[in-house]
Image (cartoon, rainbow, N blue to C red; front, side, top):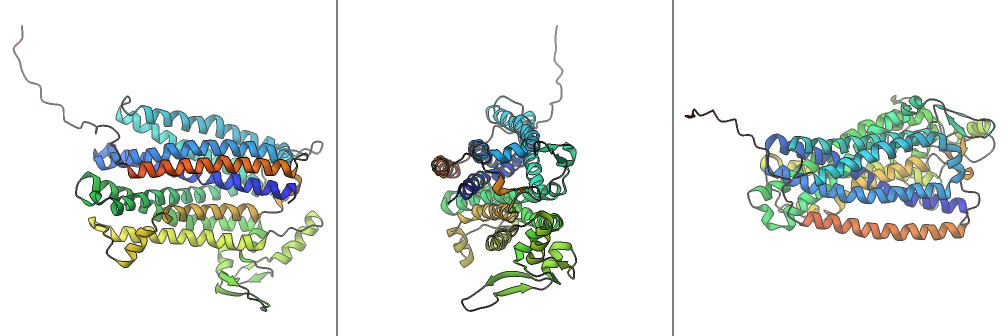
Length: 476
């Protein structure tokens, strides 16, 4: 493999692994804040215990996410120094905001939340976790703004002497139509991941711990976890669908090749169908596919009769615009990652809806039905489904943009560090894999440990007694 191919492989491994923890950190911080708010308002110990469990999961995930994020930044400078030199003036301000504002905001107030449980007043203690949740959103937005420049470069000009991108309008960078559309889509997917984790833990505690089936606080804790997780996953799935429709139309406008690659549409077509899946057997000239009529035209433009540009026409257009070259991404990867993203998200949403229906109106989830038994056997899959869907979504987003690092301005082959050798890349990739393997074992063991232990209450419920009437006494 060449240095370019190894650099791309290394970046994919580092980024995908880091992103496994990002949506969980975003969603778990907000879910912890929501559960603690419910406890603060009601004084119900079930919410207190659920808050403590979600908070411990957040602490473990946040710690691993910090380490993997630092490795990602190190890898960016190691393997993509030419791109860093080109892109640094644009990426620098967003990285500074993410590191100096959002990260320190999250880390500081997460520490206050954890160590201030018995030292801060309940209302002030609740405010600290809400600050953490807001900090994760700020962090996500500025990083997505930096990525959106790679998808649709705005707010910057190219210095003719140095060839570097020079940021001219930070406001334009933050209001890029791609980040405006991708931010709610990403956050909705993150909530699906966190909801799936709480749902799996709640259902496991009901199934694997017979004591949790008894009446009382313990039983209520599993119900809170399961139903909050299921509602979060269900609502997140609906939001992903709506925001994904908006994002698809924006992407079609700024990167028409990406939408054509998602459908493997080679010829420009009106009333374009969307294939659920396609199979090409030996000897077949054209692949067989199961199509939904007119759906691709609607996803791309909002008009089921509209014309969608094909790969061949776009290739010819880009050759005239950018010069000779191959501007077609790897079509099988774009086609299947797009469908896996949608399919896994739909399955996760369906499982959440089923759990909500089975536990409605206080009903117990006893594994009596055939579907219940199969669901309980594969509980470990529930958190994986939305996380894998988000991962495939990012793989589609980044690979279907190729051969560009910054669309229309800077190609991937030009961004690799010029002095980097394949031997150095293989050695560094092996080192990253070793570190990530250790972190994976640590994180999984921590999550299993937290899930198995009985969650302790956050701290005593707030006193809500009314002020007693004054009593008259004799005094001298």
